[in-house]
Image (cartoon, rainbow, N blue to C red; front, side, top):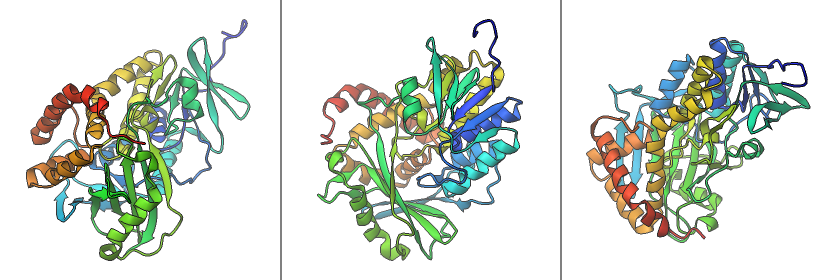
Length: 413
């Protein structure tokens, strides 16, 4: 209440950020009849630095959202390389998710998603920074371009933590791992390959094994997305030079992929893998802003799409109960897997464990298939079969070992 006049909400849902998570939330809410306003600091058609790979899980979410995949390059599986061992495996079929993935450069993927949200009736305000308005502990809307907008639910979908996240307390948990990645585009005659390629045995310039991987993601448009990512749990992480790591990986793939010069300067980004709070009165955080990134592969587009859909459906059910209901739904779907992944990242921060573990991960067909499911974000707490059993067994062991893993974590200085 303001004086004697009731404030009429300018919207039913306000979304900060027009990436995949924000666009998915906007699309579902607008299709459900909600009045949705989305703010993004960038202009329309902006590029988001990313690996551009879409897991079968992400394809499932895009199908659910009704997004046509005409602009994407279809991917049948994953080629895993560990030292001299190579294993090529198709994505599993007959499960909960489709049997294929894709590579879809983010400029085009994000445009397809936000265009669908606009067509469904969402209003998008580009080149406009929005910051949450918090009154008496509750978020009541946003301040944007000198205007005050109110809504019963504000959705933080702005990616890695920034100013909006700080106002809501949605910061990274300081002693949890995070990732750094860098990517570039290059021309390659193999741009239409139907396999993603991941090299699991990277080393830094001192020869220390890097917990992370190098990737070749063929985009089908004459180019490949070439990149490397590393976890903060590695020894010497603070001294790690991503450009040097990318150059070193490039020298490995130069010949087999015949890659040309970088089309543009390589760009790096941070991968958040935890958050202190992902909801509160009047707000929720989705996607990267909620720390929903798989610590074992740095992938988060599928989780972003799913969390956006969950938030929108709960808003349509009841805006008042949406934040706590959202937190519970996210906990049930993702928290077990993600906490196991974070513990696993402490484990592989130790060079000896990483070196020997990778030999195992692709050493046999059965283990490689489990690695494939983990790399494809196809495992949840309730996943059936060998991957599910292995995941739950690992979860139990890692939970017990957690205090020791943290105490003996590799020195990241």
